[in-house]
Structures are given as C-alpha cells and as structure tokens.
Image (tube, rainbow, N blue to C red; front, side, top):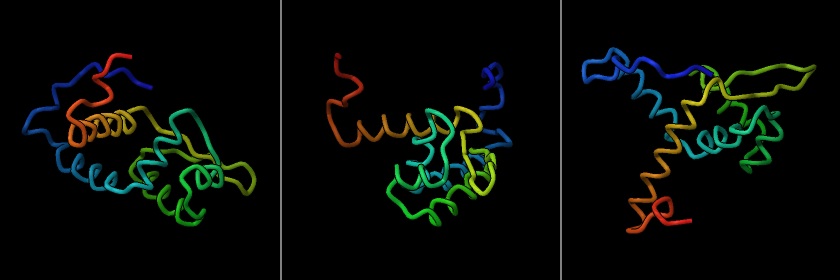
Length: 116
C-alpha cells in the first residue's frame, strides 16, 4: 500500500474527475460494494466471495471482472481456482465514507458519532 503524500491533484480542475465519476458509477452496485468489503481482510476465492455476498458464483465473477478492469482488485490463479484481493485501500476508504454519510441520511444520531 502507498502513503498518500501528494494531494495537489484534488482541485476542481483535476484531470482525474472524469475517471473518479466512473469509479462512482462502478461502485453504484450493492454486490460490488459487498465484494470489496469482503476483501478487506485479505485474499478470497471466487466461491468464498460468492458465499459471503450471497450471490451466484458466475455473477460474482462478472462483478470481479469489472473491479479488476478498474484496478480495484487483483487476481491470483492457483490451478483452476482464482483468488482475489484488493489492489489498495482506496476503494474501501471510499465505501467507508459513503456508509458513514448514509448513516447521516438515515439517522439523526449516526452510530459513528455515538460514544462506545
């Protein structure tokens, strides 16, 4: 994982804005969000991911192909099995912030603001 040391490219005129919008479009799917969250703790096989997100294996494979195309996940083959892992922590950070924002939209007193 890489440290975020340079954020000068985050201005309103950033050349990455169009690509960022495509990332949001890609993440606008419950299954993909669940897949990325499942991968937070490490590498998983397609079948294991399918079990976790309660979706058929072929559907999960299609979602993983899109996430791989976007370079959010990487694959490692071991015989006839594929194992997936996160490319870096950025996708789950975006998802985390979206979930925290969703808590504000749903609850006047979001869980993440409450004392433990």
